[in-house]
Length: 110
Length: 154
Image 1 (tube, helix red, strand yellow):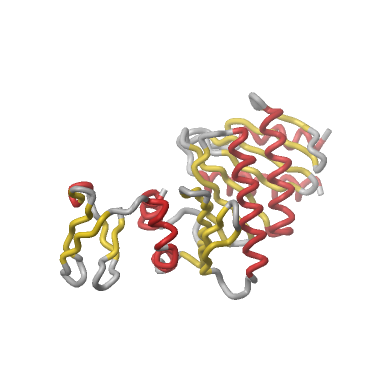
Image 2 (cartoon, rainbow over the protein chains, first blue to last red):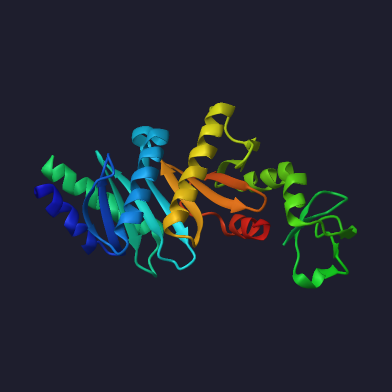
């Protein structure tokens, strides 16, 4: 419950429009997103593949979109987080903000 | 669009007005040579000039390495650091391509991908003719000149 409360705050990060969290089996844990099922599958498949590739050094993947609502994937322990960025924000700044948030929260809850 | 001088190999950034009857006509900015050669279809240009294209991209200080990945035949050309073997680069290309196409299944308007591993950024862009170009940089955005160069190729 504490973990899910933590993730629900992700929507408050500046630049984050929508998000979905999946576990390492692809199960959707929490989301605030339209068409979350298709996106969750991408988050799980890309997250797993890039995590294996980059081992524990994989930080994030950003998919750069023509409509500027870039889409990002983060590894979070045994979960993967997908985030749709709000238009008008700088992608690597949003990525840094999400990573800072995750690091702080996970330090707090251990 | 970037064109290379036939005499000295210098890259010249040309506007549309430099094209006439299917030819690129321009005076090289470095050596002054008057170039006038036929403009080949883009996909042939990439295959023909892949060594020079990668060399140009690598000439920017922010760029650590670059490779071209053919989605049907694997790595075509590489200028990656020696610490990575050919097999490592094949795996990178394959997984980046998988992720790119997977991303496009949800968002068809994807134009590129940036993957951060440790403190390096892997920029992935699709090219014509089943090619991906992967550029490794120290910064999360491509230098403007490299970005423009990639857009011209794509």
